Length: 249
Length: 333
Image (cartoon, rainbow over all chains, first blue to last red; front, top):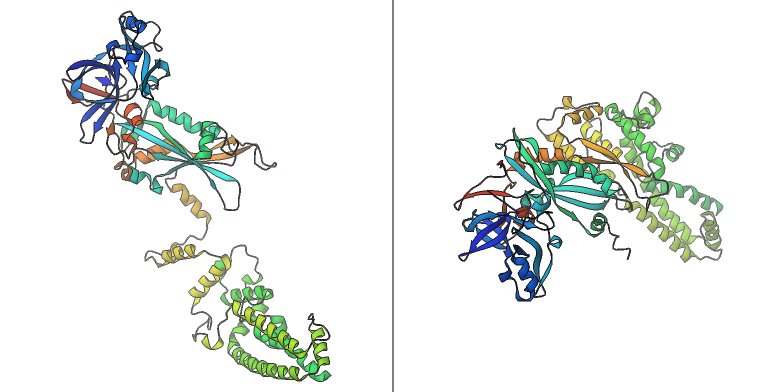
């Protein structure tokens, strides 16, 4: 049993290597494949980062996470799970266990290093979902796309109304673009506070992220839905991000 | 000369009357002619009369029983007008004859007027101009006056062309209660309803579709419009949540309140309806992220693949052969 976010040993050109399982994917032919983030030992570090202190730390089990680019392997290449600890996530790390405290990345064709807590977190680091109450329940995961845009109610009225719409990312593009598949969430009066308006939506989505039993097509199902994308144009995007609008420089 | 001039004077309004208003009952009664109501739009004064005429002729109380302020909705209350308008209809044949008489007369008289005018002396012209309240000076000459006449004729012709009235000889010959204007009750009622309520073309086309449907039954038409509200409650509509939200005082009028009600749907209701709609479900994709060369969908992206909220985040492998558990295994760690 492997989960995305796990640290693993995998086989690459006959060598046993460390990596982190980032995603479980299927290719176009329907075969499973795994996206792996490389983890380097001291000997694999680029030359400009090698040094006495890192060499010394590597003897006590330190390895280095490498940012982009990711590797794609077949499921048959996976060997076994391994426990690696991120130093910022764990207080007490037992001696001689593998640990990561730095991430290396390439910037302007130079290898650089920084603290691992400044790297992008994998979603598994901050999302934990519950298992469905029964293993026989079908699982539906919904990808929500929130769209927010102002529109003028009449052509001669200045005050505009904010429309909030929902789309389902599970639909293919040709379905999603149909106007019947844009679901209205509600309308915000002119000058209305977006955060207050969204409060009921946010609390409902927080419940849905944990999972919920729903009746789907006559039988119970485990429904998980999360907000995947928020779409807005420039003025509304600035509002959502909490910065001033482009007109106020 | 005085007499001749005074002869011109009463003719002018008659000529105008011929051109403009078979519709102004006051003037027509002056001349003892029941020649009202030919061209409804020509003079703005007679709109009410026209409306009266229409509703009197139709007397359809079914359509008019809303709170409209027309006096003659109930013909019993306005017997006079009723009679008046029916007289109009009955006398429409004679009316046409009279009209034609008038036109002949007026044309002849106009010609003669012009002749007279052109033959008149300057003094007469001056007096004439004063009486017609034109801006002309006392020294105006004949030619200028003639120009004025022509201009006025032009103006009259322009006005005349803005609303084209049906020629008398083109009025269709049809018999019945609504002759000669309409063929039957349905056309008449729909025409007046259309005019009165300013029905949009689209709305009228939809109504026509409804009526032409073979399942349409006039007895099934709901008379009380409030009934529709109770019908609406039977439909599977989404419940609406209302919430009071703060309004930014910026850019809003100073009189507006600090908070307003906003309305929204519940996202769980939307999700439930989408999941239970087989038409939508057959298009929806629930599964692991797909590593595709050409990225066009959300499941081709990184977020779908990596986040446990969207993609598949667990896989059970035994000796290289995958046994797929789609998120619903319970593991004990």
